[in-house]
Length: 221
Ligand SMILES: *Cc1c(COP(=O)(O)O)cnc(C)c1O
Image (cartoon, rainbow, N blue to C red; front, side, top):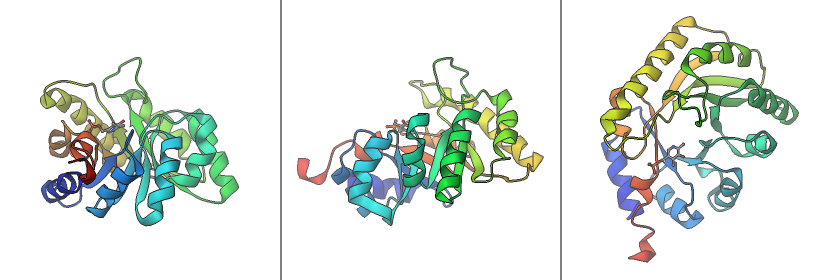
């Protein structure tokens, strides 16, 4: 099932759109099946879960952090991940900078935008993104490469469209500013129920969990 789900998605996605398999709560075996079907990027929400999956799958794929990253997990995160999609504060960025400097590596990051302006949600408010990015641009070991957003949850995928559109507008605005050390290249938006709308609104990374992993591994049926 996972294998077929991935195949169907990869056929459907237009060229230039990267599929991130959102793997929270999935076993290393399930993730492996997705990889065997052609998934090239795994998205993890928790450092600890990523460690377990990484031990099985390794560096044959890229690893994206897509969950809220706690500062005390920054050290392990910069060792594991190829891209951190969820930077939303200068404090977190400063911690990542320190850890990357010690390792002598450079970490590509996305800025998470709270496009729904929901108080309980992670992400920086759209109007505060530019200031945050200008601050992070001074860090030698971080490279801002774009934006990520979740958007509010709706039953109808069309409900997400205005939030994706606003994030795309912000993305274009920030790109036009041509801030040194900042490259607006990736726009990560859209999940199982909203990825089609997100792609129409300009996403080039989609993070899909349910639509890949529902049905379970082959052994289960
Ligand atoms: C779980 C998750 C997804 C995928 O959600 P689905 O609805 O299962 O496709 C995408 N992005 C983030 C940040 C997630 O936590």
